[in-house]
Length: 97
Image (spheres, rainbow, N blue to C red):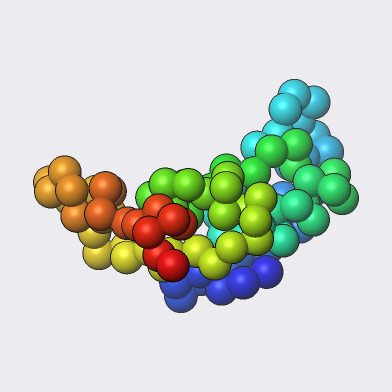
């Protein structure tokens, strides 16, 4: 699994919770496209949530579909009072070429 920021999170440590919970299990935290697909394929989760990546990539499903590069997010702009910076100023894939 990739390091996100200064943390490296392991989806496989969630397996005991996944096995104990009988409903739809959603995992989040540090997954990239490859790791998310692997976690679902191996039964470690039913769904993967991509919060930070969605903030920086408004077209994240399209980028995942094309295996396109991702915009890097800036944690310093998360949860600020500015309604634009960090939320609506990241470029879509079509505008990064």
